[in-house]
Image 1 (cartoon, one colour):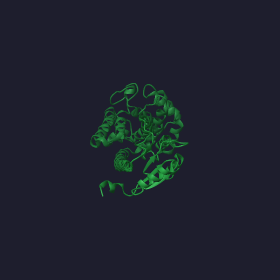
Image 2 (cartoon, rainbow, N blue to C red):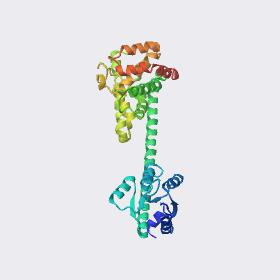
Image 3 (tube, rainbow, N blue to C red):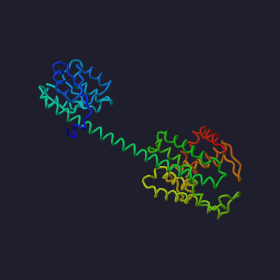
Image 4 (cartoon, rainbow, N blue to C red):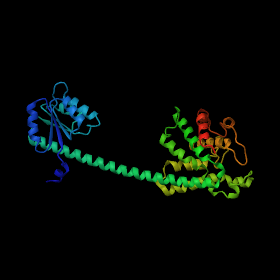
Length: 367
């Protein structure tokens, strides 16, 4: 027994389709010693058998009434359940264009009548071996893909857990912010979806990218872990020197996330890239008067422009030890007034379009 004999076990099923009973009988006699044989006297009957249980290979006549072999083959190849079943045409047609039509319909091989039984057996065996080798390769690739997906999920789980710890540390040091992080995360998701849905929306702002962007939003103030408690927790207004120190949290946060990106390499993913953009640039202003880099207009990453509106809006409607909360209408008026100077006008338009959703988020995650 050869390795191929082992590879072909258990017995494969071959469907023979021919409108001439004598041909069916002869082919059955040739194939039955090695294979399970099914017989069909028409194309319609063959398709019915394949719908119930696709065979491993089909030997198919071309010249049949009602539905010829070309049409049968085309229908088999159009059906995902039978697309990969090899089809061997067995026919009295001998013109080169007949063979070309057969291969165009999806056939794997072409045998002319009258046929040599040894030729039929050799061709059937060859194509079954090829099919099984292809199946083996596809299964192997599927297994590798599954293992890769499992590793990716594990990396994402570890990444998200690390994010949770990092954000939790920032929240622990600045407890007055309450549910600010959760609210701004959902604001960013909502605004990004609106922008992505517009006719001129960024092509790379897919739902998957928006999900990564929303996950990154809580990292906007991660750099505050580097700010001294005497400044971060001061209940009153900061002095000029203290304010200069406080503003360094943008660069500190970006540097912290860059170190994480460097360590993770290709596994860092889009979320940390968005996080770095947001941490560094969410205090930039549309007119270039923000910090730390004085970027203006679309030079500011979209992720940071979204975060700027979400962050300021939530700060305005939230009570702090040093200020009273604004109403939603007052906060929206403030954001409108800053459109084109502090804020990206397109993101402001997104906030106005989504104001009902934003209010629901604020209510759901109220402090």
